[in-house]
Length: 511
Image (cartoon, rainbow, N blue to C red):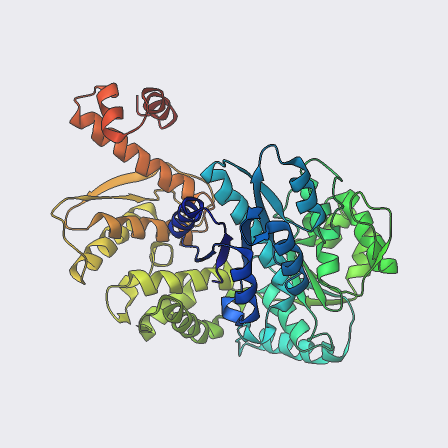
């Protein structure tokens, strides 16, 4: 990851930000004055270029505002956060007028400062989306006749800018098809911008698509370009278009009709030259019949339709996809790629894969981390593949933790607590109450890793909350056992307040 540059003549400010960002696994590079920054920019390599710049406003040897102006000339898309005093209103106004992403009042709350830098990182990645090297996108794999039809269609569409609608179940690889359509089109040199319209709240989606002017709504403290502007000259991929709200469908239809739009709060029309590729897992004809999707927009998008088959309809591709994902996962983790036996492959080919290719990719990542040996056998496969029953899922989780311990895990001599999903449907997104098992011989980190991976592979979207609750409950219960139930003593031992431990006991149901 590219570093965050910190510019401040105050060593204590630099030290605090460096340490806080280090805890977030974010690299930094520090400077004491603007001259050092400009010298570094003159000798800049692509990998050393900053992803965010955080600068004080008043320093010996130069002004943060002057630095902002010079940096914006060289790196116009770089988010710059200006640090200033509470009373320094003129400086804050000047910072925004100069294109600053945000200003950070001194003295600042460290947690809020890191949150602000995180937001700036997201903005930096959004601005850089047009510069993504599409050639680095993994090639699509598949020998099944249904996939060969998709490949032939991509080839036929390579010389056309026609709008394409991709249909298929969640996880079947619709974005990969969209990227391939862009990569092999006449717009390949332009940006490819993707947005999941179902993942963004309605109130924010309009701003995400069309951008907004400064002051357009509460919190709009600077002008922001939308995805249509970012994709100018290239391709805009609208994923899960069937979930778009009806009023936004009207605005989208207008853009597709005349190629112009207004930013939120804006008064000047903006022209854009964008090829739109849409995707959905829903039946849009049914949505139109129900009145939830505009018929004219449907016909505007549905010029060419590509149906992407689910993985269960291309089972002959599972062996090559599995070995590809195992290689890919090993490269990401910096370990030797694992081999998989023919009998294990056969079990995978018998599995229904409700999550399609994405689920297979997650399973391969799970196997890279969790399988105890270099050769993957049927017994090493995750619970949802081996059996849909809760009992067998629990049994396999115990087996996995014990096998991992015998293959090099650290035996602490203490039982590790591993939470196992007891839902009758391991792929359900519901949040069943976990069963806590004491497994002798498994170190707690391995158990934690096993449970986290099991939840991730199952498709659940509450993994952070579930694991955090288990962690907090275990700490509090252990502390209360140690203090014989005395809450104040337990709170003191844990380093938290009396009100906090009382609230947590109530929230976690530990009464």
